[in-house]
Amino acid sequence: MWEKELDTVRLAAQEAGDIINSLYGRVDVIKKKGDIDLVTEADLQAESKIVEVITRAFPQDSLVTEEAGHYDHHSKRIWLIDPLDGTTNFTHAFPFFGISIALEIEKRVVVGAVYDPLRDEYFCAAEGTGAFLNGNRIKVSTIGKLEDSLLATGFPYEVYNDAHELTKRFEKMLTLTQGVRRPGSAALDLCYVAAGRVDGYWEERLFPWDTAAGSIIVKEAGGQVTDYTGKTYTPYSRTILATNGLIHAEMMEALKI
Ligand code: IPD
Ligand code: CA
Ligand code: CA
Image (cartoon, rainbow, N blue to C red; front, side, top):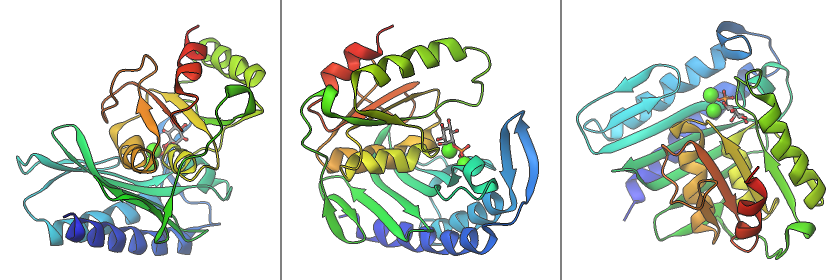
């Protein structure tokens, strides 16, 4: 049912990935959106390429992109695009970042793809199809207890304002699990939940383009995605909790501070 959409995101992610790989390793910060919120030539070039590919295939659809903003065609079909998720990693040549593209219809994510261009790992899912990594079906882990789990998380750019609350949750999870990683790309963190590489992930104050694609990939891999309080996730939720389902209740409890 979503074949044309899946083919289009694949092409867009591939072409954007080639651009990002060609610029990797060069310092090219061109703008600061905030004290530690950077934009590089790679973000901008990758975004134009993705917009070009999607608009060519679906000229009537609306798009929301991280760098340029809205291309509003009054459509219920909205593409949520983060051309480079993990820009801070990219600028330091720390090899963990991805491209995130999702299609949302009335707050329901129906297609999602996340591409790690350095590892050539392409994660995708559409509603009802299951989740895939390079064409192979992926599943969340079967770890049943928080104490046996490995988790991932991230921190918002305005970390300075309320670092205490963020580190309190981080500290709590550290003491309850086998470990917590802070890889630096929300989109890939979610795919790592989907692929069973981590068992759960939490983060707050993200944007729709950070989490939309990863959220459907987790769900289609058999996982659970809500906000911190267990409410249904939408790309507009201010907090996100994604797990293999088995440790969801325990993580929800632990996130209460
Ligand atoms: C960031 C990454 C990071 C998360 C930040 C995001 P960006 O996105 O996803 O992991 O912790 O909150 O803003 O700015 O690199 O696209
Ligand atoms: Ca992002
Ligand atoms: Ca980005």
